[in-house]
Every structure is written in structure tokens, then in C-alpha cells.
Amino acid sequence: MEKQRGKGHRLLLMPSPLQGHITPLLQLAQILYSHGFSITIIHTFFNSPNSSTYPHFTFHPIPDFLSDAEASTSDPIHLTDLINIRCKQPLQESLSTLLSHRDDDDDDEDSIACFISDAALHFTQAVCDGFNLPRLVLRTGGASSFVVFASFPILREKGYLPVQESRLEEPVDELPPLKVKDLPKMESRDPEAFYKLVCRFVDECKASSGVIWNSFEELESSALAKLREVLSIPIYPIGPFHKYLPEGSTSSSLLTPDKSCISWLDRQEHHSVVYVSFGSMAAISEAEFLEIAWGLANSNQPFLWVIRPGLVRGSEWLESLPSGFVENLEGRGCIVKWAPQEEVLSHSAVGAFWTHNGWNSTLESICEGIPMICSPCFADQKVNAKYVSDVWRVGVQLQNKLERGEIERTIRKLMVGNEGDEIRHNTLHLKEKANLCLKLGGSSYCFLDSLVSDILSLESSTSRSL
Ligand code: UDP
Image 1 (cartoon, rainbow, N blue to C red):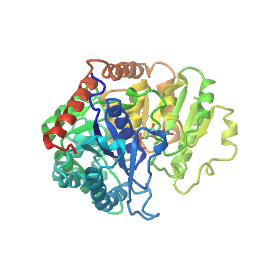
Image 2 (image 1 turned 90 degrees about the vertical axis):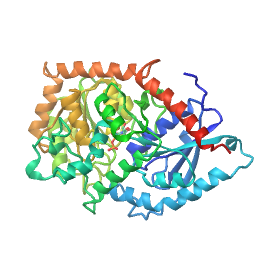
Image 3 (image 1 turned 180 degrees about the vertical axis):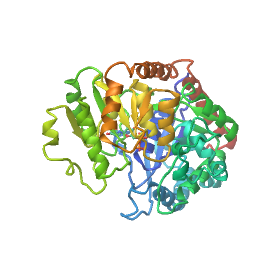
Image 4 (image 1 turned 135 degrees about the vertical axis):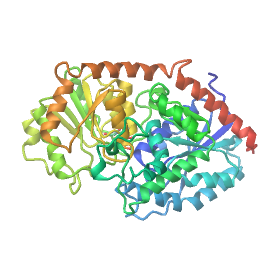
């Protein structure tokens, strides 16, 4: 692939300001930068990315008018709704400046090829239409969960949604192998808000010029085939994004990773450690926290546990752990507030990842061939977990609410003895596919080539050149 095809062309990209969305969008920006495109990141003041990590990008903040109380990830649906409303005018003003203004700055030699928006920022479609600016979408979740999102109206019509406790074990005939309990769910102050947001972002994906996925054909071929029918626009599964970039070059962490856990991992035996992290937003009760703590301790496996401040509702950090808990582990447990996750997963001491199955974590685990223990919390995580356990068979799901006995048994089943062999075999097979798809002639390689060509032809077809 000719590496500088994007030279002289600028891309405007806008992330949704949540960790699991900022990271893949900035990774995509780096991938496209490496193909010659100039990059402008348009972002909210809230959770603004660290521009000093990307000196080769231009950063363009826009006001989001969020109060301190609103700028919180405790209700991400409400937050996203607010951003979709309040950023409309600032984005219009910003595009108006960027598209019309030229000064003596070198950056402005570039023509603007298109806008690439996170799917959750559905308002950007109408804004881009107003400027005749082509809009591509980045969907930061998987394709399989998107099929479920695109089916929301029919799922509601057939009575699967809203999810009813009495029907959790029923199969969803339209979406095998999902059961009602696997359907995406997300609490918000308005009970209808999640449904409305999903329907809206699916519609605005359909109205876009194409959707980019941080996934790969071999992983989600049947979902991608379905989406080609449902969306009738080009789709580009070009992931896994982080594997295009040198390890450590992609840090867009909003929290500072505690690297001391790497030297702790260096002292552990090969494939012995359970890495535990529930990502940047999930929250658990104090009772669940204690079940996790005792389950890990009783498993007798070494563990690295990310306890993010805010993970335990009502607690600052570790204060609800019984006194002496950490000391009694005698070095068998390492607790950090935030880990350098990619580095952790690629460390040879790690043998399993107990995850909430956010899409980034799921994909990062697949890429390193690490078997997963799944505790999905909300949104697409339940769908991802079902695919991990039942379709790709690279992990197991904790079936019940968090309980120390089940946790201990599940960890031992996966880590000790032969029961985990088949899962380990499957993870290595999938890891190989994840590596191959990026190589010359691989599926993601080819889709990226098409994406670059299509971006350039989108620009010429709308004559955006200034
Ligand atoms: N992550 C990290 N350190 C941690 C926990 C998570 O760097 O201690 C990163 C992880 O590598 C992933 C992202 O945060 O890229 C979390 O995204 P994901 O989609 O898994 O979950 P979310 O945070 O959106 O729920």
C-alpha cells in the first residue's frame, strides 16, 4: 500500500469523550496519519485528550457547556445526549472557521477530505450535511453488538425489549445465540433514553458515507455480512487498531497508568496471573467488591487487580477491604488504580483476564491470546461476553451475581489443570488470525486500502478542496 496517499489532505475527527471511545479514535487518527493525512481532532472541553502526546496533530477544542455535575460518567447516556444537543452550534461555528478560513499556517495548505465522527455523536451528521462535508463514522464497539443495536425496533416490537426479568433465559430467535439476558441494557435517568440514543445513532450511521470498525473480518464475518445488507453503505473492518502501532505509542489514557505492576509481573510465573479490570466506567457495590476480593484471595492464584477510584459505589478506594487483607496475601496480589493494560496483557506472566468485556478490552485480550473470565456490566458488554464464551469460545462467563465460591472455582477451572486447554487453544488460534489480518493482503490491510481510496474519492466527488 502506498504510504503517503493522504498527503495534502486533512481529516477532521471527533471522539465521544469517554475513555473507551477516545482511545480507538486516536488510534485511527494515527493509522490515517501514517498514510499521509493531516489530522485535526475536534474535541469537547470535558475529558479533552492530552494534545502533548500527539504533537503531529492539530487539536481544536469546542465548548460543551456541561456544568461540573453534568460532566460525569455516572450516567453516560445522559452525558451523550447532552453533548449531542449542546455541541451542535459550537461544531457548526468550528467547521465554518475550519472550512472557510485560510491563513499563513502550513496546516491550511491541506484540503479537508472528510469528517470522521464517533457513532455516538449522531448530531454531527446534520452538521456535516449543512457544509456538504462527507461524514464517516467510527463505531468503537464490535460489529456483532451493532447488529443487535440495529435490531432494537424489531426487538421491541417482538416484546424482547425492554428486558423483563421473567424472560431472561429465553432465546432471542432472531439473533442466535443470544438469550434475552444478553441484550444490551443501560440505566439512565430517563428509562427510554438508551433505546432512543441507539436508534438515533444507528439511523445516522445509515445516513453516513461509511462506517469504520475496530474489528476484523475473520472475527465477526457473519455480523459484518449482515451489516452490509442492513446499512447499504461501505463498511470498513480495519482493526485491531492498536496492533498497527508500536506498543506504548498509543497512550490516550485519561488516568495515569501505574507501571509498578510490570515489575511485580516480572516476578510471577509464566501464565500464572489473573488480571482483573472492569474498564473506565463500570461501578460495583461494596458487597460485590468483597466477593471479588475473597474469590481472588481464595483462588490461590496471583492476581493484578485494577481498582479505579470510583469503581466501588460509595467508596473512595480500598477502605472497604477487611483490615490485613492485602498483607495476608503475602505478595500474591498487586492492586493498582489504573494499569498500562496493553503492556499487562502482553506480559508472559498473565494467564487470564477477568474483564467487563468492554469492546477495547475484549479485543486487546483476543490479540494477546489471553483467555477471559467475563463479568459484563452494561451496554454492548453482554453481547461481547456471549460471543467470547459461546461463539469464539475464548473464555467463560460467571453465570450468577458475583459470589466468592463461583469466582474461586471459575479461576481455578481456567488456570489450573486441563479444563482450560481448549479455551487456551482457541485463544491462540484467534490471536494468529488477528495478526494475519493486518499483514500485506490480509483482510484489514485491504479494507484500510479501500478506506484511504474512498476518503480521497469522497473529497473529489464533493469538491471540498479549498
Ligand atoms: N484500560 C487501561 N488501564 C486500565 C483499565 C483499562 O489502560 O487499568 C484501557 C483498556 O486498555 C481499554 C480502555 O481502557 O483500551 C477501556 O475500554 P473498554 O472498551 O474495554 O471499556 P470501557 O472503559 O469503555 O468500559
